[in-house]
Structure formats: C-alpha cells, structure tokens
Image (cartoon, rainbow, N blue to C red; front, side):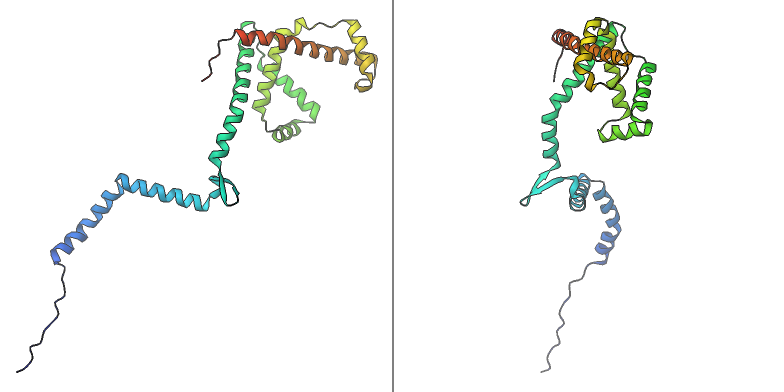
Length: 219
C-alpha cells in the first residue's frame, strides 16, 4: 500500500492582519513618540550619554574609585560661602541706603574718575583689566567697590579731621616707609594716611549702629 505523503503545515500570517499592522505602524510610532514614556526614555538615555562622554560635568573627583560629585561640591561651597556673601550684600545695602538718605551717593563721573586714577597707577586700562581678571573681578565689581568706598567717604570724612601735630608725629614715625621725599609731599601723604585711619575707625563704629538698627530678615 503506497505511503501517503504528508506535508508539514507552516503557520501563515493572514494577509489582512499583516497589512493592518504595517499600515498602523507609523501611527503607533507617532503615538509612542508623543507619549510621556517616550520622553522619559529619551531623557534617561540623554543623561546616560552625557554622563559617559561628559563625566566632568557630574564628577568633580574620584577618590579610591568613589566619585565626588559636582553636586556635593556645590552644596558644600554654598553652605560655606552663602552666609559670608549674604552678609556682604546686606552690609552694602545698609551703606548705600544710609548714603541715599544723606545725599552721599557717588555720581557716575566720580566713579569714572577713580577708575581713571587706578588705570594711571597700574599702567593703563589693559593692565587694570589683567589685574582684575587675576583677582577674579570685573570692571563691574570694582565699580561697585568704588561706589561703596565713595559713599563711606562722603558720609564720614567730615569727622575724620587731622591736626598738624598728628601729621608731624606720623612723618617722624613712618618716614622710612613713605614714598614722598619732599616736605610738602610727606605732609600730603601723612595727612591722607591719617584720614583713612580715622575714617576706618569712625565707619566701624557708625556701621555697627546702622546694622543694629536695620530691619534685616534672612530667609
């Protein structure tokens, strides 16, 4: 009796289902791209790639195989310097407010004049810019410092009086360290130095009173 030939059946994908899948695939892909899951996956992949190729943006140092992250570094810096920087800004605000009350705010022309004097002292504008850069400062920051200094001078320099006896004594005690050589120059240099000393003392006393009476709220 002849053997009946048998054929293995191969599963077939119905043509209609395959066509529907292919036709609907672009729409499904677009829906996936517009879903939150797509953006979340893309964000995670982006962060991973950034961490791999730009590790220095996240890691400040490695210690025995353990990372010190930039977040840790920044957090510590903020903790250490926030109080110091905030106090400086508060003090400047107190000084400028007092200067405004007493019409002792420096004009732009006065600040420009001080900048010009600095440029002459150091040998030019480019030299001044270089020195400021080395100290981590800018023209804007030095102008602000000059504004504060001029406000202090305008507020209290009238109280920083110097007698001729004080000038004579200062020259006798400090002549070897003074830059001037002639009599008039020595007197001018001594007078200016004594005024600055007295101004500093007066300001220290006055500022403590201003700070104590100021309404300060720290958050």
